[in-house]
Each structure stands twice: as structure tokens, then as C-alpha cells.
Image (cartoon, rainbow over all chains, first blue to last red; front, top):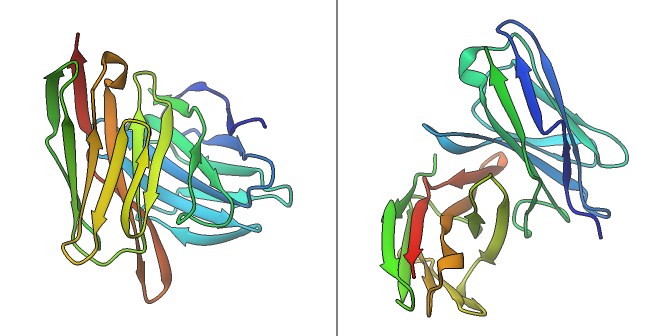
Length: 113
Length: 112
């Protein structure tokens, strides 16, 4: 069974630009969660999607958004990039919710210049 | 808002030693995850606990709901256990699940 895939793996953007990251969950998994990891703040929860609906959102500004498609694939978008958005963005899939075992993707390393 | 604290932040031990990593949280939770992250970023889920104890190979995880505390133990530690270990708690509020709150991680180095 294929694992969670994320594209792209690396991305360099400049301040003010926007970016879209993609996550394909394990087949059969309907919940996708997104996380941001930085050296200073560690891992932080961004949002969780289930059956194309955002079920929960972390404490991030509205510049961070996401969506989930009918095949459970998910995208997250960050608009008006700031230097502080440089981070490793991880997605994780699970069968139904975060109380189930989470399977993490390799992450997308975003650098904002 | 849930606060998750891990200790120690850094731990260096000799091969074969028994390792304990602790995790405390501030509010009631429905589940607690232990994760392992190797250099390069890949994260692997080790355990998901809601009560009691789980064992997988040389790894043991326990949780005490009343004391809001969980521990991860590694028996007969090996250099390949060197990684960052992260606990993450799932709590619920009136609006539903709050999403996972993560500890800062424990950097473990096992020397041969």
C-alpha cells in the first residue's frame, strides 16, 4: 500500500507570493491533517479535513487555507507569504480522525526569501 | 488550551541502557500519540494511547489519565534508536476536537 505523498518536496518563494502544497493520503483514509514544523515553535496543528469538510482549525491566520477533494487528496494554500512561513509542512492521513493512528508524509520544505 | 510538556529535552545514553521519556499535559484528552522523527524530517507513529500500556518490540508506552502523564520507555537501547521523540495530545472542547497539541520533542542520542 503506498504511503502518504506530498508534492513538491522543496519550494522556494519570495515574500508576498502565494503557494499551494498537495497531499495524497493512503488509500482508504478519509482524514487529512496538516502541520507546520519550525525550529522555534516545533510542530503545530494547522487544520484537519474529513470528507471534503474542514473539521478543525489551529491558531493560524486566515492566510493559511486548505481544501479536500472527493478522492481525499488535500491541498493547503498560503497567501501573501512572510519570512516566518518558512517551515516544514507535513500532512498526515488517518482512517477517520486524529484519534486514529496518523501516517505522515515526508513533508514539503518551504523557504521564503 | 492544552499545554504539553516533555522531559528531558535532550538525552544522551550508552547502548543497552533503559530510556524513559516523559510527557505531561494540562487538560483532559481523548488520545495521546508518541511519534519518532529521524534527521531529514520523516515522522513515524509509534503508539496511540487512550489508557493503560502498549508494547511494541523494545518500546513500551504508558499513560495515566488521572495524573495527565505518559511515558515512553526503550529497553536495550541501540544507536538506531537515536531520533527525536515527540508526544502529541488530542483534546476536545465544546466545539469538538481541538487537533493535536505537540510537545517540543526529546532529542535522544544512543552512543555505541
